[in-house]
Image 1 (tube, one colour):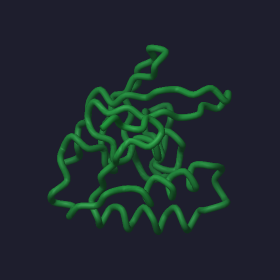
Image 2 (image 1 turned 60 degrees about the vertical axis):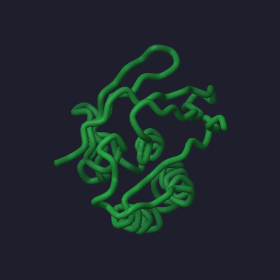
Image 3 (image 1 turned 120 degrees about the vertical axis):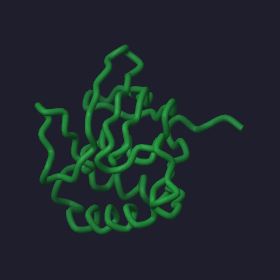
Image 4 (image 1 turned 90 degrees about the vertical axis):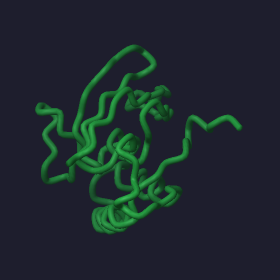
Length: 131
């Protein structure tokens, strides 16, 4: 069975998922499209006990290297909004990219619509899980 590039399977720790759902609901309508996209992603996630989540799956505070289909590579750390700092590579979970990365596993690809309306594939190249 082939993965749907717009909706690849994602997995989250159950405790983290509950915290992120609460965050997305709290800021819904106040921070652009990111919270709505995050709510959608969380709604389709498979959850497992937090301590059973593979270290190859993107979670909060993971450092993730990804590549877009146009060859652009970037390394970011996925953080809560109050810690976000684009210049330091700290990407908010409420951003479209943050919401897209959460729950993906090493090697997985997701397709996103960019700010310019063009679709872009984003592939996870490495995941350093928090300790």
